[in-house]
Image (tube, rainbow, N blue to C red):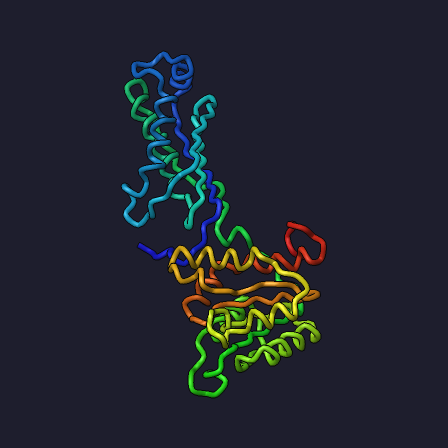
Length: 304
């Protein structure tokens, strides 16, 4: 089974369809409930709902999901019964297989209950019609000329006695979006950190991400440096990062990381630990890029 531990929960939705071909007289008798096995469509609907919930028991590599909604609809034509299944869940992984299973089992139930009166029945297949949710459902367009920078705040790293892993993780994440960030290491000095942030803002850098200096020691001053530079705080960014981290380690609550805006620049403080950085990046991207469309006055429209 594939690990989805790093994923965030989003609203997932999928629609699938299955079709059954039958004789015209079979369709007429089905609609009139003139069949040996009564109430075929209501029973098939119940079977489809049950199948959606049982999908992980049938398919070994499907993750168990708390399903929020299942709908089974039927449409009949002269020689065709179309079954459409819709499944919704707030989850880390999609509900395509639950939807396909629901449509397929509903079709099998109809087939089973109609076969005594029609030996020409044929299930024509099942196909996924639509799916939404997950990070792929929140793709953001990165503005042309987008500039980024990564600041590592660490006394030991600046002295060369400790290698940097966390900053490199941020760099690699930004590179995965086709960006090439500026990178520097600074000692844990408030004035130096604030000066570097201010310089990036003056240079028109769009996103400045820091790692380190968000803890509780006397030398952890990145947050204070950020407070001295930004015009306003954007609380939800670090709330999202801490909430994501808190579900994986209770120590996430001890990070004082701040996110804020200075003109058109966003400054975001990530933890010093590489694991904390990794989890924060999972929580923030790619949705973070949506902020730049909002800064242009686009609200929650797709960035352009």
